[in-house]
View 1 (tube, rainbow, N blue to C red):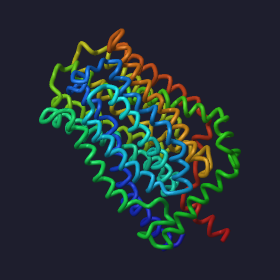
View 2 (cartoon, helix red, strand yellow):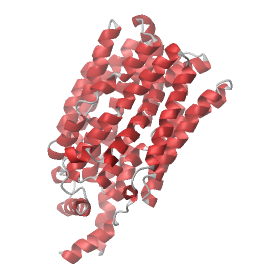
View 3 (cartoon, rainbow, N blue to C red):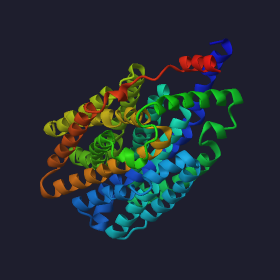
View 4 (cartoon, helix red, strand yellow):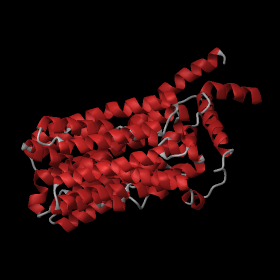
Length: 440
């Protein structure tokens, strides 16, 4: 490559990391805050005021994911063929309105309806933003890009935990929903002013830079087009065994993630016998650990090209820490350390996992595939919280946590069974550029 090409390679990544990732990350953070604030509201007075039992609390936490099903595939297709920017913009309007209305509920049935509606309005977000990431980042960068975006989970946890504890202590649980709904409206302005769907629409990069990125991504798709998924329809993809492995893996993973996330404040409150403000502070550390875990495993995966291994290891670690949090419950700080360990592994597999569809499906199909995997897999987000609530009601909290550990262990086994082509390397960008010149 000549000096001009080297300069171009140095310039483009810095612009994309700074101009695309932050607005997507901030928008995902606010969506997650709206999603999990109920975890703090329940032990913070909502359950007592509305007469909500443990099983009903699990249902209220999990019904979100039934609504979450509806816009997964449409969202992925819109991001491929239309404007993911407009889709997320309208979603932000809905998140804001529903969150504020939740602050005025008077009974558990109104709460269930609004949680379901929130699930519908947030349903298309992840396939949309992951498709947008695929529009901007080649495979060699995509694991890190996905991990940074999915880092909205720990960042939102770090923000939500102390903020929720403070708002509930200073005001009450109703203001928690109202204030975070107003924050969603503020993020809408940032989103509409900053984001671009794809390189062809961006005004802030030069024609040369745009051409380089489009050419790089096109070459990746040409490589995929030579594989067996060339003209696959969505029906054909759904008949693929690997597709169902990905769905099943994501289901058991999400069961563990949301079972842990939505019951963590309650578990911490019972473990430490402390108030909500202290619970909020204790809940920060697991999410800090999650940021380190996501960065570590996604970086190792990108450097080695191994996807299966770096999905398996975090899932196994998550399962073991979940198990230890119960077995060590008589030793409060050891049990808390295991819960922090759960946080470290919480989303560590996610960024790597979401690089796999782009390796197995064409760009045309990957958006819909992500939607199907996320939609059906996220039914685990319903099963996890609800199963824990039912087990707490009829057995014990320990039984609920053991159930989550088992689910994560199953997900780890499924990761090992994924096909070897998930680890197939992609040619370096420099090689792609040289080959592009040779054929020009």
